[in-house]
Image (tube, rainbow, N blue to C red; front, top):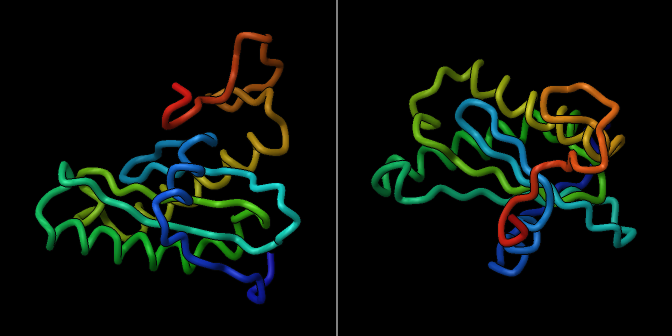
Length: 142
């Protein structure tokens, strides 16, 4: 992707809830939810969240700052236009080695891109899914 790709923020609760109805991937210290908006807008929209399970407010804010920077570096190259992403901090996001955190985000985005291109891709990367093999749904659709 190019550096000129427009990246917007998800700011309102309904936007986060809509993204939670898409597919998700968990890698190391991050969970990424993706929703293909299919609205004709090529902008990537991204939101960040951390629950109280991650830690106190200082730890949660540090985790979200790290996720924002990782998204700024990685989304222009690995993000898909017309999609919403929510990056969810997990325990250890604030302390994880920076290179490993970037690798977690990159691998989750790569897997989500494969799932978007070929819905029959299984979680372990193999293809040829049977009708009962569906990508993992997140949020209320579980």
